[in-house]
Length: 387
Image 1 (spheres, helix red, strand yellow):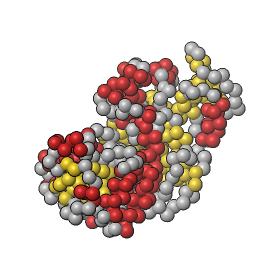
Image 2 (cartoon, rainbow, N blue to C red):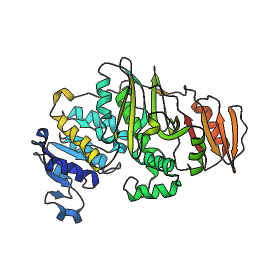
Image 3 (tube, rainbow, N blue to C red):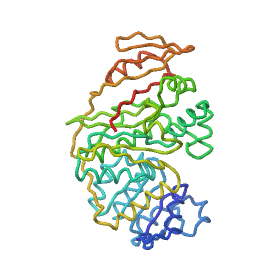
Image 4 (cartoon, rainbow, N blue to C red):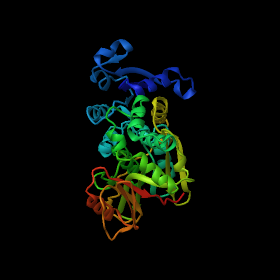
């Protein structure tokens, strides 16, 4: 199989390295023949081109690997590749979440495959595992730590007692966080992964604008210490549940008992859990990001293209509407003194108030957070997952 790589950054070079240097038998028939990169980088590799037409119009190329990131021009390039009957493998969670239905239809129309394992969970075979579990079970719930940068920050703050800004800077130095870390610390990255996972698990498209998303930007060293004294460890969780014709999803910090599996996931690692009718809870743990783990997931998809038994047709036939059903306890840290019927207990620490809520639904939580009128508010859910 002849392959073109769109983007020759960290992940693109990882894909090239695995295909060119690793000796596993399933890699022997793979060959990278073109790489799309900026004109000034042509001296890095003699197969680099800066013209996408050199790839999408080349009849010898069978598969296009897109690792550029972002929506544009990735959307246009993936569409062009599929239209020209080339398989596409991508790690780009933003473009997959936004256009998964369109890309799937375009791939089906042109008799090729569109695969995106590396878009969610890095090197963890999460998407493949959802697909396999669904061959027998209906999947009604999943949750997990889906963002390695967020987990690294929370873990370092918890174990080293450092401030958020110090740990974020270190994460950027290590290459875990971008210069603009908004996607990781404000939750957009995990929102995209919840949308993608829901598409596979529930056969449905969910809208990230509908469900609650609270980030970790406002967490402080004092918050970490406060929750630690209560026996909790904070982890950044994405989750979704399907119930008949409705779905509910959250992206927010969760308070886990310190003995929980999730509480002990360190550094930039991820863990994802699905719940199946017959199999019960299954957990998948591993490197959630990084050059070679992500590249490994991409190359696994490339190999799967030539394995007919791995084919899985995505189906978006379930028309789910959002509905706040679950009731959970939450803790809100704010500098505003608030009185509300849904508050069970208030603890004042320094100049802040920790509002412990009764078990309330997402709509009531949203109203309570708005009532705080505090731009620096921090919100966490008390975790009560099964398995």
